[in-house]
Amino acid sequence: MDNKEKLLEIFDNDPLGLLDIKSAPSDKQTADERLVKSFLEVNEFVEKYGHEPQKSFNVHERKLYSRLKAIREDRTKIMALMAYDEYNLLPTQTEEETEEVHSIDDILSNDNLGILDDGAEEIFNIKHVPKETTMPDYVARRKPCKKFEKFEPLFIECQKDLKEGRRKLYPFKDEQQIHQGYFFVLKGVLLYIAEVGKREKIKGKVNARLRCIFENGTESDMLLRSLSAELYKDGRRVSEYKDRLNEQFGGVIEEDTENGFIYILRSKSEDPKIKEIENLYKIGFSTVPVEQRISNAENETTYLMAGVEVVAEYQCFNMNPQKFEQLLHNFFGKACLNIDIFDERGNRHTPREWFSVPLDVIDAAIGYILSGEIVQYRYDVDREMIVAK
Image 1 (tube, helix red, strand yellow):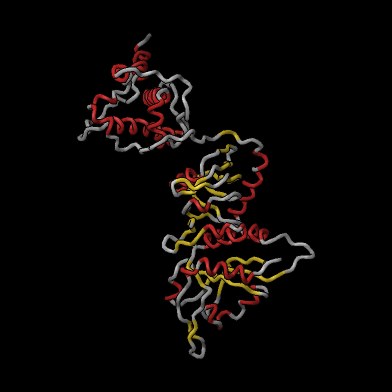
Image 2: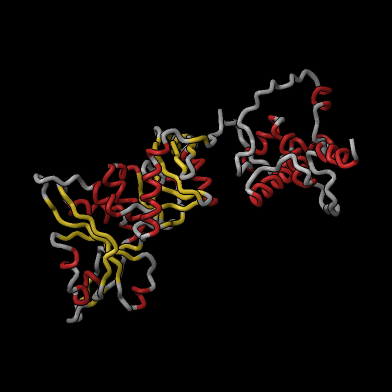
């Protein structure tokens, strides 16, 4: 064995990076802090190079390889580090049999990382590892998607819609936005919610098992709240394509009856007290084409005596669009614009069809009304989001 191989053998047996040459820290680190820090260095390597560390002749990479290998072989470390596993580096189960513990001596002799070196009290004072009363039965992991060819056209169409402006990306706000048929972007990868299992309320929170299909040909059956947590950190919501919402109003055949239009407008007013209001939209109903209805907007108080821009319109069949409009108005009632508008004669009017609500939230509410789920939700005006009742 030559000197290089001897040196590499030494580094292979340094799972906590004790040979790193660094200035001594001013504050003493606890065992759990050292464990987490050592694993975060592995995460940083994966983020930088796009693959997990290998058993190479690069001393730093080989050291991280040995460290990861040691962690993977210890179920206790895996459980403690699962919350920090950003790149699915850790197995959810270990197939090796757990060594039986019969005495204190067994515990002390199996202290591979020197966790007990900092004093006995340290192991009962974990500060940085998330506390869990119970561990999950298993953690969802990605796997190759069966029959991905069934979903691939959906991703192609969604990407095209985004490119051509028919869909937009919005910040992810809460788990109530996660529904079957919706798209999201997680860490730069487009994903599609193919299935949503039975929703159950556990400890006051609604959860469900999902089937998530990723654009890279993988899938996962993660829980709704797990996906939500990941989207909060590094995700975006893809808006619905308005033509798809139109289709949900009912398939059109010869016997169907056209009932009018639901529309969403944006004001072009230059009045400072109107112009400064964010996410201001008019939700209305018309029995005639929308362009015809708004042709005289500059002279009508209902349009704030200013021109308007059509943001979206939905042609309605086999339904009562006036009731549909009223449902939306009631749902967003607390966000209704409260302002006085004066006509050309100086008469005062208070329009009641303008709401300060993000457009993607309005789209989501329309979807909930069409699916019948709207009764399960309410609009939180302070957080500008739809939440469960």
